[in-house]
Picture (tube, rainbow, N blue to C red):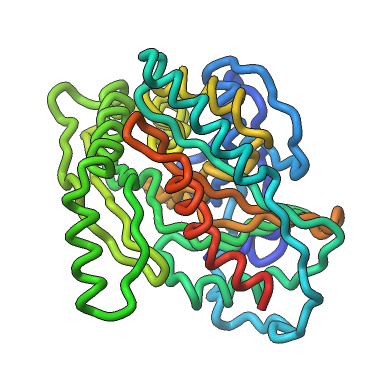
Length: 360
């Protein structure tokens, strides 16, 4: 868990980057907390800015770590304090969602794209929450491997992400795209059956392998020749709320590859865009009603050896305590074989844990 208060809890020297030509000035032998907004794609690919950006997170943020503090030793008062019922509403109706998905499928049928990650946002105004309490409750439900809690001035990221964007150890780079979701069973027997059905499902496997191909292409731009490998394909990982189909792609980096080189080659995450990637991002901007902001961006750290771990900011709540506004976003993969109503239900399944903690 990252406690990223500026000038508190051992962090200093916040570096905001809003232009791809600017240098992050990451120094060797130092540790950083890293945040990358989904909108940083606009700098990488020179896309226009999209409206409806309520949260206004920075494009990139690097915070130098002076010292590591064990979060277990920090006393946060009022964690169990009750908060008023929060009125959360979807920013798109079921009917409009289905209409948009069917229009997107026309682009697929015309060969414009093969797959796209299409998302819907939930939001609440005039709310006051305790982010630390929400974080604890959310991860008590989800037990997510890449969870994080970060505060940037008045803005909070409360994340229970199950997805790894990138991990670097030495010259090895790994990404683990998720595509394919199924609900948990009511008992062990049903759960086992659902897992087997998910792994064998042609639609889910097709979605997954398309995204794996995008990830392979991204890594090949910065990899030594012949080192891009698919280490795992169609693997099933189970979490408290859902089963997920996860693949693992890795490579050996070319000599002298910088952090900026890696991000510019791979961001945003393949699973959160589509195939082909650039055209999918253009259509995401066209069809999604809200600017994604931090959602489907990345949060993580760089250590003193220049190794790093970055998650994908999904299953995450974003909160601005000054504006008294929060939102979260969920999405699913749209392909030629998908059914719009099923994709809508998948979005609701992914939203379940966040709904529970905010209305408990």
